[in-house]
Image (cartoon, rainbow, N blue to C red):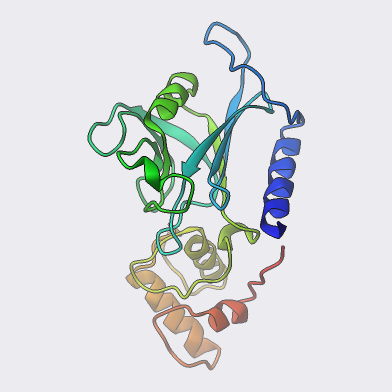
Length: 227
């Protein structure tokens, strides 16, 4: 119940930021109507995708997002690609501008995987429903993804190591760059540059030198989990 309340609050705040909020669903507008601004809100934890039209919820779809080890890209992005993809993707693809990988909304050959976090980070939907969304959504549409109460850190701190990716990695890279330890461009991918930055941070702060970013190190950097 607590998770459901948090998800509802997050959704209300998001819709409020668009200046219009109407909780009732209504019929999806046809392509002939003018001055329509679409947006998408995905709650991975609740496995729900909401389609909004000028700030109003018009449709709710069941979906699935990323597992703990392969999270969906938390944050606000844009749809930058639409394509008709075949085997394994249900025929329709809407790609986001995520810097650490190729993520998007697509269908699935495994409908039983919907309704719980089961993907490698993409948002899966029923094939007929993603085909419907594909027809409605234009390039440039904003999509916001949440997965838990802690913003970029989702459901909580992860123990991060080389090869992992996500919004939490991106935030840590930004922090390390601000402090002068990360010299690359923050991209949400934990690689050799991030390892070196972590080692520099540890040496400078008199900590045990490591290549991973454990929970205590994230706290030492000043990150807090605040709902």
